[in-house]
Image (cartoon, rainbow, N blue to C red; front, side):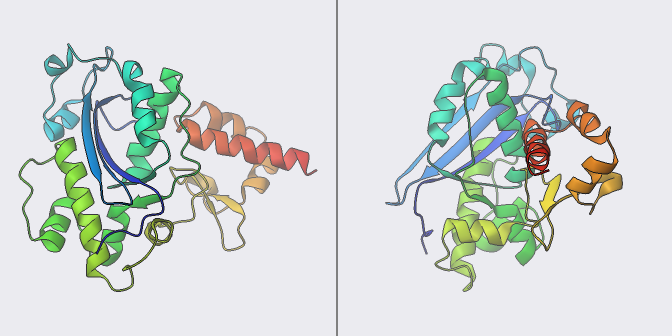
Length: 258
């Protein structure tokens, strides 16, 4: 059964120099863009990491070496083109909410390119899969599609396989059949995130609370009022810019509402 699309959906995957969304760099980005009329287009970009070394653990996963990237453009040279590909789309991926989207937003910020996902629904295929079956992408592909992955941890392969799995999930489960992308995004969400990384979430009363560390479960408003140094620590810590922007917005709203 086809996805119930109100606008195009783009499924993407990245390979990176490491796992730090703030400081590591994207070295490969692949996408598959599916339109409401069923039209697909896809593409793959590779980037010179601009002097950032590739962590051996990451290289062992994706197999991309620094030598293979020497003649590739910097991310900032293709940033506007990539932003145009994503424009007006809902977004899907495998664990993309916690890694792929935040690191992509950091790259866009460094490139000086306006890139907003505020109007996009996010469908995390991994979250749907874990709620239904709780395994990894390879097992998901085998379970839903009856196929084996031929090119493990290739960004292009992962993006193509993720789309196939998403389509198969919608077809496999009666309660997902006919859902809009917005409904799928809500179903796939573990928490009601305020920021993409889920450092701040909404509690049962729809109030923002911290979702990590010593203040996990505490109201953001109370923490900011009682611990005057916490906001400064958060802003200087190694958190995604999106998380910092949301905390700043909450802080400003609290000041204005006094």
